[in-house]
Image (tube, rainbow, N blue to C red; front, side, top):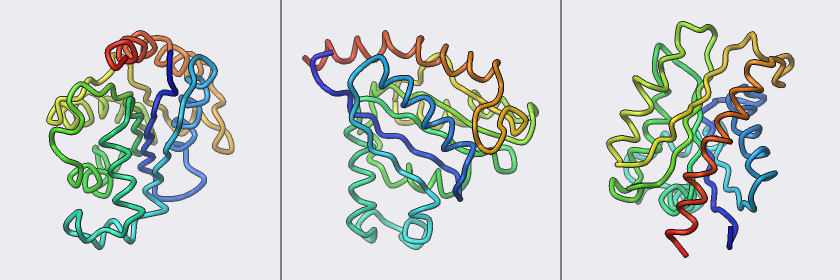
Length: 184
């Protein structure tokens, strides 16, 4: 790649430590081993009170406006959310409600989610893909869903999850490299 890939990662977890944040960090680490990256990390738990209090983009404090600009100008988005009542959190949705509806056209998005059990694994297909489909973003073919049982002390502790993370990055790279050539 001829330049650093601008990655904006959004972790929808409310607190720290977070399994959702762990997945985001694992993916960005794996990508950084393959290509040069510049990472802008947004942790919703860190900005929740300010984000939730703003009804419009103009009402946001400048740092959160910069977070939204980072979303809108990313070469790649990595998004993750914990499952809450069968879907992403309201705050996660609110963040993307404030992004311009045409800013993500053809932007690759790697989808991730975490939940208490396998019962919520379809969140990627039934909730996240439609959300980013609205933006006309390019959701990557392999998303990563992980359950609580695949972590120990908020660290990946499952060979199956490790394999899914590796596969997601492997399958994302051709889309990312193609995008780099198109920009150049």
